[in-house]
Length: 246
Image 1 (spheres, rainbow, N blue to C red):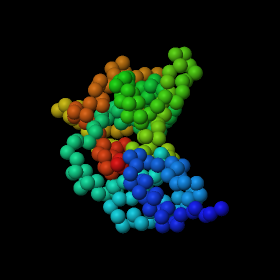
Image 2 (image 1 turned 60 degrees about the vertical axis):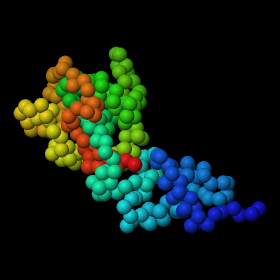
Image 3 (image 1 turned 90 degrees about the vertical axis):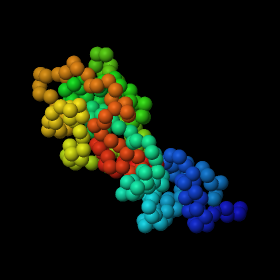
Image 4 (image 1 turned 120 degrees about the horizontal axis):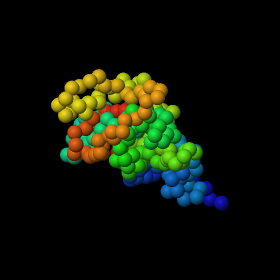
C-alpha cells in the first residue's frame, strides 16, 4: 500500500490555511477532517501547531489555544491600534451584569437565589437573559429544593471570549478585585450622584436577604452609559483578564 503521508511542511501549511479561513476556534479533531485518510495523523497536526506557534513569536498575531480549540488572533498589546479599523463602539455592560457573571464563573453551579444572596439585591431578568443570549452561561441542572430553581454555569463560549482554555486559568478572586475596582464606574457617579467606594460584592450578613429592588432593567443596552467596557480584538478587560476576540 502506498504511503500517502504528507510532508511535515505541507501539513503545516494546510493547518495554517485552515485556521486562517475558520471563523471559530478549531480542535484537533476538526483539523484532522480536512486531511484524507493516511495524509496526517493527530501527532502530525500537533507538531504542525507547535511549529506555527513558534513561527508567530515575532508576529503581530499569535496562535492561541482556547476552550473550543485553536485560533489565530491579534496580540492583545496591539488592540489599541487594530481596533481603529472598526467604527462601532465596543459592547458595554453594567456593573450588575459583570458581578453576576463573575459570581457564576467562580461559584458555579449557582441559582439565581444564590446570586441574589451574595449581591444583596434581586437580579434583573434581563441580566440572566443577556448572559444566556450571549451564550456565556447555560442551565446546567436544577437544584433539588422546592421550586427546583435552575442552576447556572459558564460555557465554552465564555472561555473563548475571555481567552481562557479552561476554568483553572481564571485568576484568583483577589486579582479580579484588583482589576475591577479601579475600572468600574459606579452607577451613581454616572448619574451625577456621589461616588462611594467601589468593591466586589460580599456575602450579606446572616439573617438578611436580598433587596426586593431589582437591578436596572436594561443591563445589556449597549447605548446606555456603561459601568464596564469590553473591547474586542484584545481589549483591556474586566472582570477577567486577557480578553481577545477575532
